[in-house]
Image 1: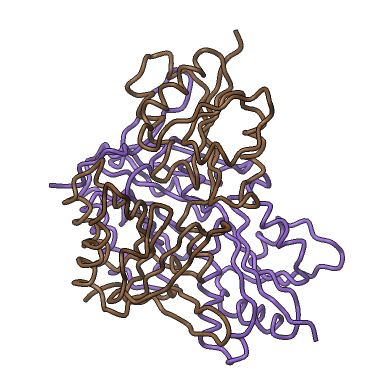
Image 2: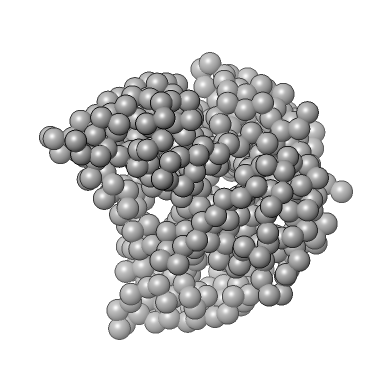
Length: 255
Length: 255
């Protein structure tokens, strides 16, 4: 039997021009593709390549199925949007390996990095992540809301720019509003907030507002939000969208 | 006169297979290239394309020169390693635009994102950034050390995984050791620490150690360090390097 392998592949923000040649080669080398259906739909596969679509919240079952196929000799690809290491499939695959049979630890597992959403959104507006920043998933499916709340406060207090992933969904309608509320207690009302939806995709929608006016209704599941620090600046431009950036020279948060 | 343009381009970690087609196209379209010499050296340019190399710490002068060339009608590329929005040229260009003549605000400025170092290092070892994380530049050239120290403590206390950029240089020899010392006061001694040097390049060197044993001598200017949270795990594997990952399910830092 041929030795199987498992490659976790990041497809980037969604524009084909942002898929790295490394990812393209890894896609060509795989026989079996596991992933959330909308990500699998992005691939142009050959007739001999098989897809195994699964639903959004089934990361662990998907990882197990992929590892089983690799253990059976398949060349497996697990695909993620953005970067697979950021709130995506790479951690789920590691968890499944740790909890799974000893033989899974012998599988050739590799990760192909991709451009994660906050980098794409930042590129669209200037350089809001130009200084120290953090990334927080607003989902409380896998952690208590108190943990999210404590991290938001700590990050804002310490002067980090904050990228919010998984800001809102039908099942989690109030978390983003609550997050803005908490951040308004720490940060000035004119702190820039970037709503970056589907950056670099045909349905892209990028908006810049002030924290005081930030409205959760402007976000959906495809949105990554960047909340500036008190040092993040907006540069108005005639006939062009404003630039949003965080200076490299920083004093550092609330004092 | 043709209208000039300025594109800030991310070249990724350094493997040509990680340069996006978008970046390749942007490189082909530019006439004048500004950047730190080692990044310019990565490019294979045509005879009609000109390079303007500058030293590492001259980001603002480089930005001004690039903007002047664009204002004069050139198709300018400013190149960065990794992603230009993360401790790199995009913020410097925005700063120069804000401080510069009104006419610079009319220039067509665009950013092409790339894979930033922490994503590349993470991909090499598993998924250490699998949950909430932050990125901190250890350089105190542009911010007081007290700000760095406060952010390190806040991030560790709140359970963020921490990626350290610019950890050490000849001019800044003690900061990384001091950072490890501070983190040891907050995090368990067995917290995984990843030293990722030149990920995906021929001279790559990746090491995993425990915080208690982390030695600043293992890092240089080309190293990105990832310090886990108290929940980050190591999965030992026979005949393979261990996997390091942060579970998606998290309780959240020190309690």
